[in-house]
Each structure stands twice: as C-alpha cells, then as structure tokens.
Image (cartoon, rainbow, N blue to C red; front, side, top):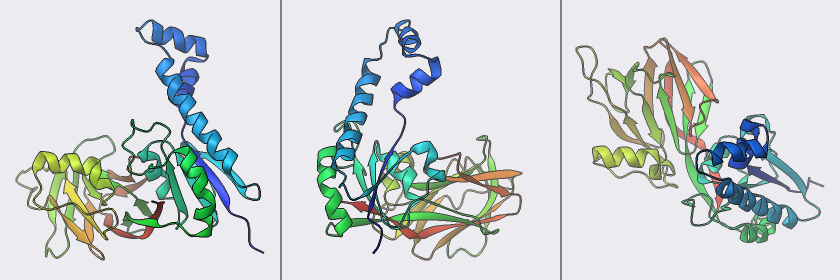
Length: 298
C-alpha cells in the first residue's frame, strides 16, 4: 500500500514577524513606527489574513493525509515527496520561489489578500483551495504545465527557474562575456548590466518592463508555450564590445551560449540571489528551456 498524500503548506514570514524580530519586541516595533507617523495596523492586518488562510487550509486537510509546512527561507533544505500536494499561501513570487524544487507535484496557489496581489499564480481563496485538495490528489483537476527556464554550466551544475534566469556581475558592475544566440555563427563580446532569459510566466514581470521600454518587435511567449525570450540589459558599445545581439526568442531545443570574461559572474533564478551558480572566467553557460514543468492547479 502506498503512502497517503501529504499536504505541504508553503508560506513566508509576515512583515509583522520581521518587524518584531528586527526590533526585539512588539512594543519596540510599535514605538519605531509611531515616531515616524505610522502604526502596526496594516502589518497586523496582513499577518492576520495570512494566518487565517493557513488555518483554513490546515483544518481542511483530510484526516488520513500526512502534513507538512515550510517557510520560504527553508525551501532549499526541505525534502519534497512525489505524493505531495503543495498549497502556497502568499504572493505570486512565492510560487516561483518554490517551482525549482518540484518535479511534477501539483501546486495550489492561495491569495490571502484578494485584490491586492496580481493573482497570476495564486488564484484561489483559502476556502476554495480547501475544497480542491481531495480532487487534486485524485487527479481529477486540470493542471497548467508552465514552461521553466534552465541554466547549465560546463561543470555539470544546473539551475531552473519559473519566471526568469539572470546572468550578471554579483555587485552590479558591468558583466563581461561572449554571447552566442542560436543559429548565429560567431559569438559577440559584450559588456552589459547582465542578461535575462524569461519564460511565458515571467513575461508579465521583469521582461514586461524591458519590452515596454525598448519596444521589442516580437511577442513574448505564453506560460504554457515551449519557448522563452532573452534580453541583454544596457549593452555598452566600445572598440571591443558590441550590441548586435541584445534580444531574441528561444524555441524548444534552442540554447543561448554565454562564456564568462569577468573574474566572477552569477546566475540565479526568480530573484533568489542566495541560491546561485558562480561562473568563472572562461566558463560556459547554456540557457534554454527546461524539461521540468510547474504543474499549477487552474
């Protein structure tokens, strides 16, 4: 007999928790804000809404299921099971932070503050998510299989991300590298603020602002489309660096090849700088479409 499903509630520390930790006590946090004409009321309300949502989910988990809970900062140390059903309570970015650690487990996104968050990935109320749990485990709900992006180093290290992969200098200085898009015969040496490769899910975030500013001449991919877009940020023309290749599309099987020419570059995904790959001088990075998908409950 197989193991029962496990419901794992994913959350992050509330602003109230962080304020109290920073100032030592609630009273000290209140004093700090009061001297600046503010109160804890807004942080308390958000904290309460998140706690209520987690409570609603926890109370609805079937009695014969296993249970788990993990905070955002512990995701890289948590051991996920194939039978897990993930319930993410928080903002859209928390789903993206989780996605890289999963291999096909279904994810229910819960918005504890409907109308405040965009709700692209956290679409459900806590009450609705509670009703969905048995149906998710039974496999009777439709899932969106969202494309993810992969970065692979020539030493075997790999990183995947739901929204986008960033490559650049760790201190935000100019990154120096050679870049070779698919079907281009020769690489181009560049100096820039870094480059990003975005999936269709990420097309509503960072890359959307890049497209709005530069007016890219192609449509960004959709979330379930097997494709990605790439952009170089602020490429600098000089006698030894060019700007010919600063944007493009990647289809399934395509790879953007980057060779580092700085002392150290970093690659990270979805804004999680703490979980990153280091790229040394002369090291090659290949960025393309990941085989893995995020399985998001509609």
